[in-house]
Structures are given as C-alpha cells and as structure tokens.
Amino acid sequence: MNSGILLSLLGFLPLVTPICPVPCKCTTNITDCSSKGLTVENLPVAFRPSAEIIHLGSNRLTSIPNGLFDNLRSLQVVYLQGNPWECTCDILYLRSWLQWQQNRSLYRDVRCSSPAHLEGRIIAYLTEDEIVSTCQHWYCSLALLSQVSLFILLFLQGILVIFIIVYLQKFRKMTAEARSTTRELDQQVDPWA
Image (cartoon, rainbow, N blue to C red; front, side):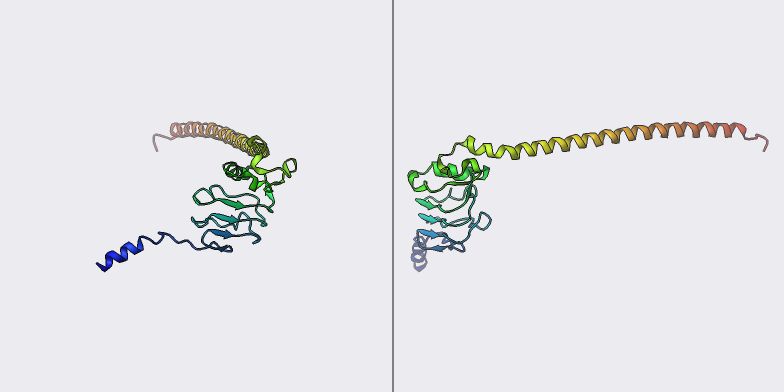
C-alpha cells in the first residue's frame, strides 16, 4: 500500500532532471550563458529540456553545432547577438533554425562578421547559395588534392608494374641461362668416371 503511494508520487517527478551546463546559470526555464567567453569548442553540448529562454549573447561563437536546439520543445527564444558569426558552411544549421522561428525580428542583430562579402548581413535572411559559395573553395581544394593524390598513386603503381615486368624478364633470362648451363654441364660429364 505504501509502495503504491510512493510510486504514484514518483510519477509526478520529472524522469530526468539535468543539471545546468557549465559555465551557465540556470533557473527553471532560463539558461544564461551570456558573456562567458564561449566558443564552438566549449559551448555546452546540451541544455535543459525545460529551457524556454537561452542567453548565448556576447561570447565568441562563430557557429552553432548541428542539432543543438532541435530537442528543446519548450524553447521560445535564444539570444545570440554580440557574437562574431562566420557565415561559412558551418552557419547553415543556425540559418535554418533561425528561418523556422516565428518572430525573426528578435534575430535582427545576429549578423555575419565574416567573410567580407557577407559582413553585416542578417544570418536569417542569407540564401543558401550565398553561404554555399563560401564553401566551394574548400571543396574544390579537396577535390584537386584528391585528384592529384590519385594521379600520383596511379603513376607509382605504373612504375611498380614496369619494375615487376623488367624483373620477371631478367629472372626468365637468368633461369634460361641456368638451364642451358646445367644441360651443358650434364653433357660434358664423363660417363666413364
């Protein structure tokens, strides 16, 4: 009987009570990580599911990791202003998340710091082509490096095949000479000895 009451009381407790991410300060529905010098590398990997407001302003964030806000069902607003946003490939998740927000006017101060041709632009209003155009140099460099590496590898394999063919021809020649020498020696052996 007592265990039934205890179990029913436990049913009212949240299943998971996550702690406040370091170095942030938290209340039930507000997570304040503003002005903590956060970068992408030391940004908390998760926030409380009950968070309705997250303050990430005035840090050194250049992008937001993919999926960081996806499981926060209660989330209403994230304050992101005052960060040096780099509008390169890594900003695509943040741009997409901002475009899904009902009140985009809250994000007018979330602007690109770099690259130069996007500096000062509001991230939520960037087109995907504008962002992807910053990525192509990296992809082209990677493609060029891959092709050069493949060419070098094929060249080395070709040289290896040539060496193997030359070695096999020399080996056949040596084998033929050894056989003929053996035959000559066998013929020169005195049968009376």
